[in-house]
Amino acid sequence: MPIDPRRPEYQRIWATVDAIPRGRVATYGQVAREAGLPRHARMVGLALRNLPPGSDLPWHRVLNARGEVSDRGAPEKERRQRRLLEREGVRFGPGGRVDLARHGWQPD
DNA sequence: CTTATGACGAGGT
DNA sequence: CACCTCGCCATAA
Image (cartoon, rainbow, N blue to C red; front, side, top):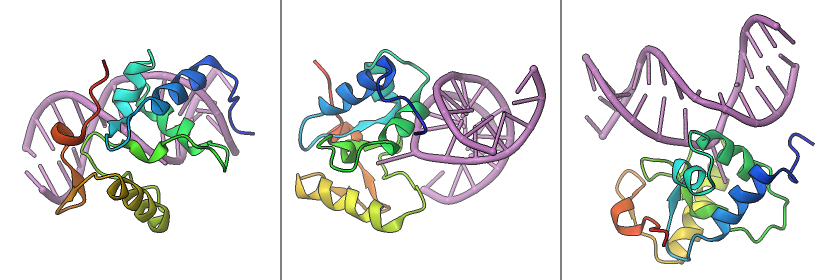
């Protein structure tokens, strides 16, 4: 087991991701800040990488700061993420970018 | 203890 | 736009 999923940092990160509404996206840095962990964008990636297989968390709604699906060396999984987003109405422009001003999550 | 790694990001060229 | 460099920070080795 790489990390300890019981730690509050991970609990807060996952809770934040869980709050991203359908059809909207958030960046790693944004999730980190919302979770009260500024400068921990990389930790968000770490948290998502360690999700239990059958998790219902909307992990696919997290993109990098440029609005693209992050390269994790697994083209198949990356295509799946894109498909899941398109399924909920998120449009990808040429270059595989999402317009964050249009689809970005604005927390209350 | 020291290095390397990485689903990241800001800022410069 | 594309790259590149550097800072960041939890983890792993």
